[in-house]
Amino acid sequence: MRAVLDPNVVISGVLSSRGAPANVLRAFVAGEFELVASHALLDELQRALAYPKLRRHISETDAAELVRWLADNATVAADPCGDPPVNASDPDDDYLIALASEQRAALVSGDRHLLALEEQIPVFTPRAFLDLLTRA
Image 1 (tube, rainbow, N blue to C red):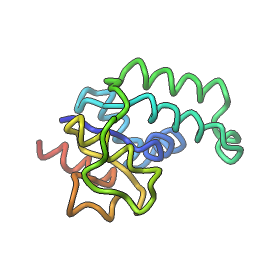
Image 2: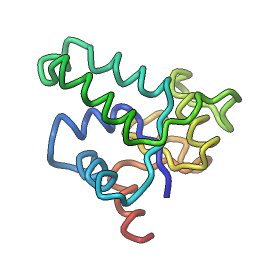
Image 3: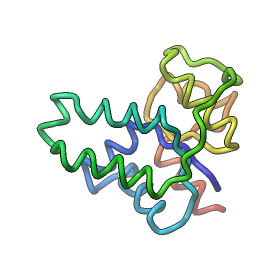
């Protein structure tokens, strides 16, 4: 199984070792699914980790190491060049939909704008994705 993790899932999983986002990261490390990223996703993650509210919890060095770790361990695909099959109400999320679609991967997110599309695309909360992994 392949999955694209919304940067909010990665950040949540790093901020707290408990909960579904952290368990999704552990499942990736254990080889339970293939993680797909793109340069745009890595850039967004890097930008988000630099926000002052997150900088209090994740140092600049740790943030850089996290992005580098993800880049080294995920399958880094080209940024999507086409339109997504559906559009999110937040156009900044469309690249995630396009990436997951082009890479034939599930999208894992905690973003309600993306989760609202569950009838149209394979998008899962971290908990639902973990449940899917256990059934696979």
